Length: 431
Image (cartoon, rainbow, N blue to C red; front, side):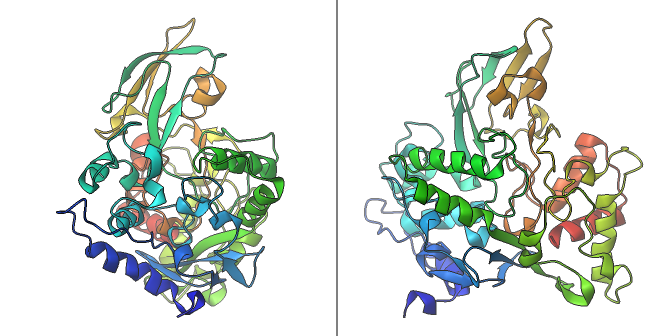
């Protein structure tokens, strides 16, 4: 059968079938298989092709390679020496991020020898012993959470010092911080901030920022020589042309029914403008109670929460996208130590001159620009296609969208009734 003859659903299911056959009791004898992401099975999927997730189905839409989403171009071609490509960490079936389930299945399918696990790039420690399957499994506890390493030194010009470190892996020092992050989706790009901490932002030019990011990925994560301009531009133009969004919901059916405007085509065509979400305005009086719940959740998102004086759309102010129009980064408390898992480092950061202290599991923007005021600030991500790419926040501390809502209630003082929580979750699941 040709590549084109293998369906996307078969590709996804084959992961579980192959992975279930791996016998780790004989680690030296286990055969390695291909990684099993969609790019390994098919050259393209049709625009708007629905891929199931826990809340229904989502799809992608490519303007650049229409009427299909190409999976055989520069984005999916290893540009370096270790076999990784951009798609290794940004999978179409995972909303252009990658999920813990997918990473774990990739491990099982390859006995931990897929390029994703190559060269100790994202192992728990830089020199972790990867000589057997069992050791590779034990070395990849963070990667199997869908989190990738960041080792960052505070900039020379700064107004703070890292004065203490507690690192369960024993790698971080006060001059070199070691932590782990979820990959942002490479779809629905609108605002100019590039990466969680803005590290690759170039002024207010999104394309220039993505070019900077792509160059760094080739020489870093893919361990290659600098790629040609033609290759880098092809990668970036492809990324900028991808929309991704939920297409079907459990109970709601298609998210374009009865005048609604869900789905990836609308997502990619949406201009970057400040405004409310209006995707589901037509469902205000829908006959379906599920559709009415999505509409009510949309309005909860759009409007001020009386208890907190805040609104979700205050930070996520890009209409029908959810990024921040100005590219502003915010501290919502996700890096606060009280939300840390046992496998997260905690850094104590002291402002020079004042002695004011912040503690953090990931300093965010402040680790890049040296500003104490920007410690723990992160990019406001797009919120289309959320259902395909759990867990959430830069460090994956929310496993579900309900946990996201509960986090904001605890961290920022939002107060919702049980019905309002249900409605807001229904809206987020429909994006």
